[in-house]
Image 1 (cartoon, rainbow, N blue to C red):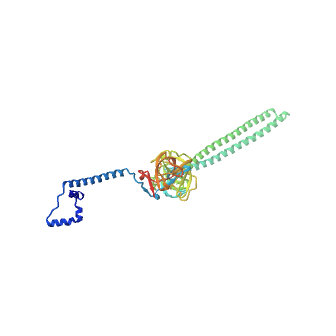
Image 2 (image 1 turned 180 degrees about the horizontal axis):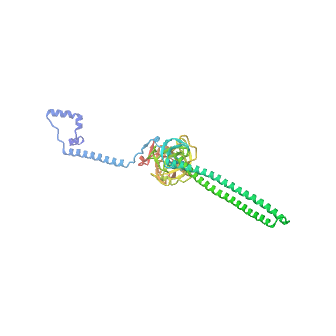
Image 3 (image 1 turned 90 degrees about the vertical axis):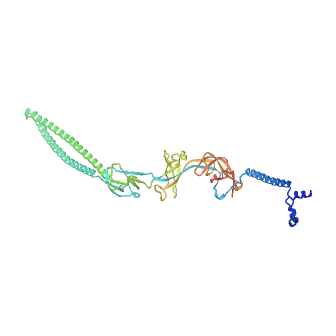
Length: 456
């Protein structure tokens, strides 16, 4: 019985080995004795013990797994220096939209041919500064030159004919004036003689027949004088008509000659305005010497350098609130110029709307057409509103999750924030934040799965 208890308490015989059993076994082996066989009860107890230990380990692992699964994830650490923060404020907020664009000339002039012609000489190349009278291209047209020469000859001949007609009419007038003077003298003499004869006849010194003859002669000479005077008037009227007709012919020829000379002068293509020559000929076909051009063909493009405006590309979603005469600022990267909206393109291209802004300040040095600029247009001015710098995830009229700083800036908790209208750099806060709250404005999308982060 004692041996059974000993086996149960020490089934592997460890104590025996410790108390010198190993030496005894060795002595027994040396003496030829053998250990007793292990009983079935001991084997069952050993198996039960192994099963019990294994089951406990399995149960422990299962409980540990369930416990870990129900644990909340630890708050991740975010580098405080790597995020951008903003503070909620109350006051005036400017609603603005921004876009990129270029400076474009207000005065752009395409210069076309007045008359058809062949390109003889090209006097200026694109990029050259020009004045209104600068000749860009010279054309030639032999037919127009011949026509102008013939018209000039006709004009000079008509002027000579007018001079000759004036001399002839003056001579006719003088002849008729002499005839009137002769008739006037004859009438005057006859009237004096008739008066004398009448007086003599009254006292019986002149025969009645003689008196009658004198009276009749005077009357005839009076009629002749009247006829000569009327003839003189008719000559004057006819002379004025002939002169007017010839003068009209001369004026017509002079106008035709001026037109043809203007067409000849138009063969010299001039800039017309002060600026820079932008282009010669069609964009796809540069102008060349010897090229034949028709009337009205585009020859050159000249842009003014002093009158510039800004063409700003604004996103279609933001352009719907833009109106004419709204104030704007144009950043040329060498100074900011005030301006106002003067045109809104009704068409949408590639998701943007072109807005033209007239510049109301002096141009900085280096300002030129096609210079890249940034434009800011002021839409409205909001008074006494809650606002904050615009976060990366801030969309107008929506509710967004933003991380608000807590624990004196040691951590940030995600809070739902209702936002309203947006500007270029600010957004209106409707709910979820108060004055003085600090929020993270940077992109925190990688931490969307967490409601809290630590800042270090």
